[in-house]
Image (cartoon, rainbow, N blue to C red; front, side, top):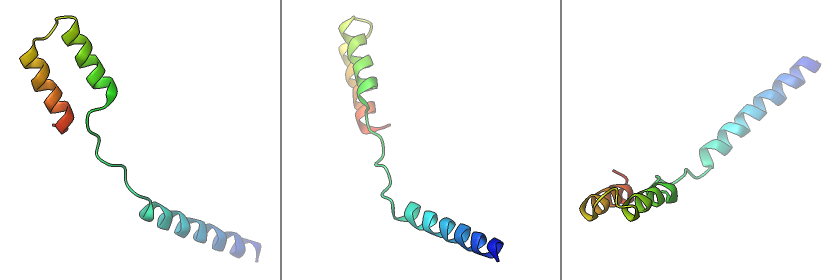
Length: 65
């Protein structure tokens, strides 16, 4: 009898977990994160990359491509 109760509780726990995971909103797609843009800005400020390369890379980061 105890095994049946534990099995039933386990089944309900799995069902509830599955429903909660399905209803939880998904994370939005990542765009440019601050760390990547910060590193790019540091490289530009240090003169490692030019303005054209900076703009191109920044646009790719912002667009997510």
